[in-house]
Length: 199
Image 1 (cartoon, rainbow, N blue to C red):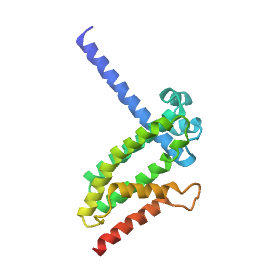
Image 2: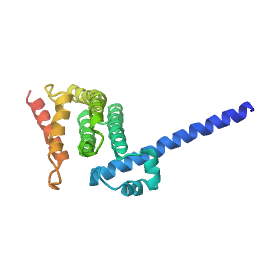
Image 3: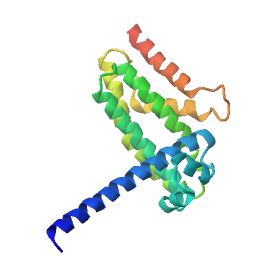
Image 4: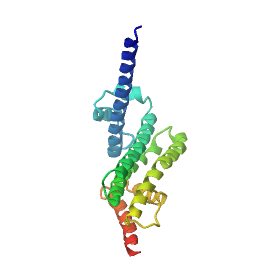
């Protein structure tokens, strides 16, 4: 086979892999939106419609619902990390960057709390929790450090405490439409800002 044909085939294969990753990302983004709105028991047909694909495509990527939920979980962790990196490299003021990241973290936690309800994921939760901490703690700490260096946040609050506190705030919302976890998370941050201003 001529070298040019091999190169062309490799290019086509690489293009197909890029397309497959993009399609999977679109599917995971759609599933995350549906899970946040309807919970992890939402119909697969609804997820497929949101993603603009057929139901068969969802099952081809994720044969079991638990596969999809775990993939969404990891995808959202990765998205939070990517957002944090962009904010750290961007032009936003450190406190504004931290606040924007906290909003995304809250949105992620709304979906995260449905994970345990999915049959068959219990054995995976330890690994997922470790992944959650390993990926998110460093970027949260860097955002906090930037805000501390700018004099916006008290030195007394660390990434684990902040993430745990926000997690607890998100845990108790349930179906109460008046419960705004984002607002409460910002009140938590405002307390850290207030402490900083007093010292």
